[in-house]
Image 1 (spheres, rainbow, N blue to C red):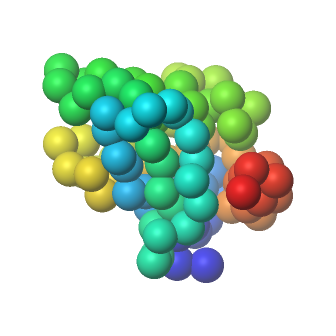
Image 2 (cartoon, rainbow, N blue to C red):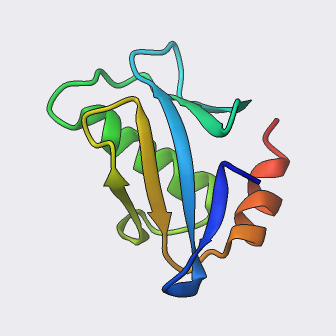
Length: 100
C-alpha cells in the first residue's frame, strides 16, 4: 500500500504518509486520499498545534504512546511522513481499517 510501509531500519515500526487538514470541525481519520491517509484535526496550523493534534489522534487510534510517533518530514506542510515505533505496518492497517 503506498500510504504505509515498514521502516527499513526497524521491522517493528511503520512509516505512514499523511495528508493533514488542520482547522477541521473535528479530529478524525478520514480514510485514503490517493496515496496518503487523510487526517483532519481541529487544531490550527500555528505553532505546531496541528502536528501535536495529529500525533495525539494517531496515538489514540493505534493504541500507541504519543512519544512513539514522530513527524519525520513535512512538519510545516500538509503532506507529512510519520514514523510509528512499536507498531508494524500490518498492525497499523488492521487497527485503522475499522475506522472508515
